[in-house]
Amino acid sequence: MTNIYPSLTEIGVLNPEQITRYSLQNINNVDVLRIVYKRSKGSLLPTSKKFKFGRSQKMVVTDSGSHKTETVYEISPFLTKVIDELHTIVSHKHNRKEQLEIIEDEINRLEEETHSRVAYLKTLINNLSD
Image 1 (cartoon, rainbow, N blue to C red):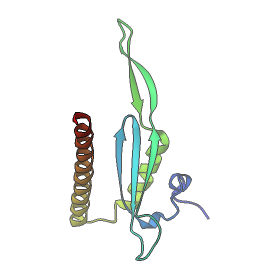
Image 2: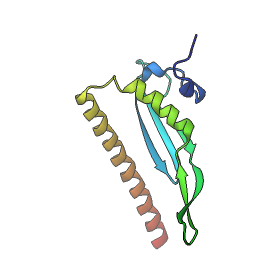
Image 3: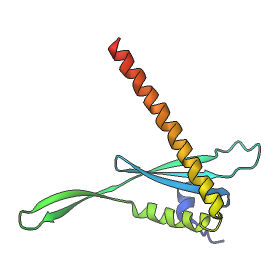
Image 4: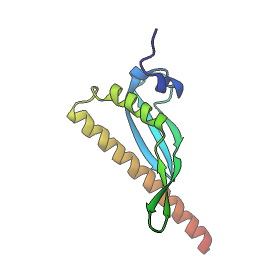
């Protein structure tokens, strides 16, 4: 039996048919991949998983006359393969309305995380000013 998603299998994704969407963020030169699953009712498996991939550091010459260099961080080639497999899985699963709902859900999630983080930082400021 051939595995049609070898990169996903390598990171431990065992049920690719349950994947509904994914998101990718870059935080401090680390790519954070979040995979969201549709689980059956009563399932004890998580509805999402996060994976972190470091970026490779590369020095490139920005000015050949003065030999100035700049550090560039590149996405992992392995992560690129994972994203390709995920795109294959989810690209045909959602119509336009569902895609809009997914985007709205992601915005709501981001707003909640941002609100929580701001509240935490305000608490730290209040504790320092007392």
